[in-house]
Image: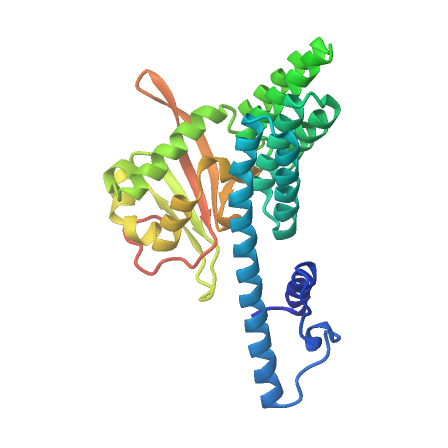
Length: 315
């Protein structure tokens, strides 16, 4: 159910798209429909408004998908003014629909356009905005960070700033290498490889393979949801986890892993999360496996109800 705050946000989106929201949306938060008929009409208006917004966002995304690749063709052909126009519109589209990652791509390509156009001041501006936004939003986890850094390095080299050219590349590599350090995961690329292997195993429903990728005993906490069933269970072996595979890795959890590549993970001191915090990898350990070191999950928190069919697990 939408709160008045959410509805006002939707109204603001309609205004931003040049449409007029229904009058009742702009009424005071305390205002309520006085009859069942007016309540029904309000519900229908909200549903129509949301459908209109979804349609407009889809149109904007389609427009971006046309403009962005076309801009590269223009750059390659030396049509820098045409590319500039397309990319500035692309940035505006992404800002209007709140899409951060496409915006970073468009900002970086704007830098590319201006650099090849030999407009170094403008190139630096857009490379820097892409770089700084990436660090702020993703702690440098979105890979385009290195593209922006390389662009800045080229600009600095072209303008005689040799030290700055080397430093920005060094800073970017360090940022990428330590992007999970706040969660006590210090070897980011090693964790990234582990995570993508885990995603692949889950995608193949490889029960045995997934079970080998955890450090035992592994503790999983469910915080509760609609049914308010919360609790923590400890799985002491691969066998115990495998026996509860379907209860733990529900369709919702499998969908999360499927739809969350490593570049979309987020972290803080309490762990590495996905799905807006639906699942947290709260303890990720670097362990010795034979002659090499690997990351393994030692603890997870899931913001869902404790499954009813968990078996043979310690409380």
